[in-house]
Length: 190
Image (cartoon, rainbow, N blue to C red):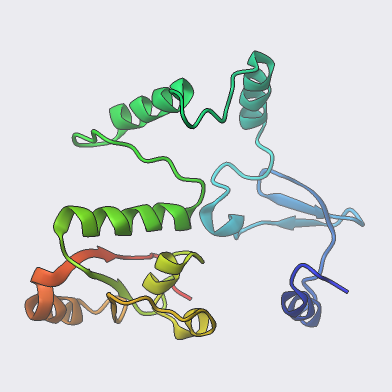
């Protein structure tokens, strides 16, 4: 029995996708029998460098050999500061503040809070069938009730328009543009 997610396990088995993957290299996944699969999904963009990229592992191993502390919450995180400075320097325009996040959903949460705090407005507008993550704010921005209903979502202050419907966007902006803190758009729709 799959205790991680029995429903998902059953679904994968039903569609013959319950492969036991042994390893992955670049854009290739290899199962326990040695069969190779080209990975077009790339974890929805979370693996932009592929599986186990040599450059990343080399950088991680170099960092490990330095024994630099990684979790120093109440103190200065000099390596994180260097990363933030680099990101600000290479990003177009005048980016002056960087917020680091562990996941896309966490980045969406930070964006929602920042948009509401800076604008003083409540509404987060997004599109139907977009996907923004599994935390409550990101889930609320995900305009698909299937993902929200069992968790009490969406939270208040989220509204949706059809993806690609410029007239609906123009109409919503004309109707309540002064109350909209942000418009969040996902280029991958489900």
